Length: 444
Image (cartoon, rainbow, N blue to C red):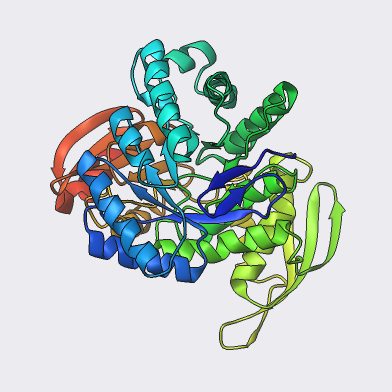
């Protein structure tokens, strides 16, 4: 899919240019020292674009200072302001950074008013050469669009097309679009629908790919690679983020792998495959464990999502960090990798499904530590969907598929959700996991 070029500072997205790797700070933007330092580390790790949350107008001033410090030290990596709900903050940020990420439907509950505010933002972006990412996530589409289409991939596509049509009406084309979901099936279908709709209309804007709230560890990497690779292999996607509930520097190697693989700089370490009766027997000779996981996810994720196969059996070998040869044939680890792959592709669930945001400057507690503890204490709840979210801005909406949710309120307090309903509010952090487990056990 040949998309138009979008210029974000010194980076070009789309138009046949290489896939751009980006990430997001998890510092508080108001902490200028910490945010600038993290931006430097992310730049050195290979990030080509860095996003920071901007919850208040005061944070816009902090963002300007962060940008100045980076530019003064010779770092030209474009900065993206992540703005929710407030068109005034988005407009102010558009005068400072190279790109603004918004969900314009959240600017106002009244669609016509939201359109007016979006048009104001577009005008400022045209004046300052600022790009916009229209970022719509599954679960945060708004009542008007879900009433028309449900909370579905179709609704995501329709919502995006409304805003893209408005961009065209305003003669503004420096636009990137994303339709993220934590469910890989929903995410892939939404992007495919949008790509087809844009091509049909002749307005092929670049697409930013990501599996949102993917979690961490092996699961987060495999799930991200399954969803993103299914689209990149179709020729859909121009920039990627692998969202992990970890230090954002740790996101970049997996994202760079995807950019390199689909930029034809890397080849899979798969040496042999035999597919019979819906099962793929795959043999690998891989230089590392992580490379094996990513290759496996890219080689077979799309086939599982599209139901071309039903199972994968792994064979062969990889080398450990100490250089030892690890044999996969018939091993527990080979079964574990297959289980993770099938769960990521939503084909078979062997453990709980976790939804966890990567954290950002809006997060007011130790998200990674809490998420790992929730995973440890709920590992027996096979098939249950449990969300751990950093804040109330996106948490309740974007964990729409979860059976239970743990959402930070700030002030060391937590809200516990049962599906979309808050059932306990203002729970102290040091009690919240216990209370969550009590509620779960009461229903079992």
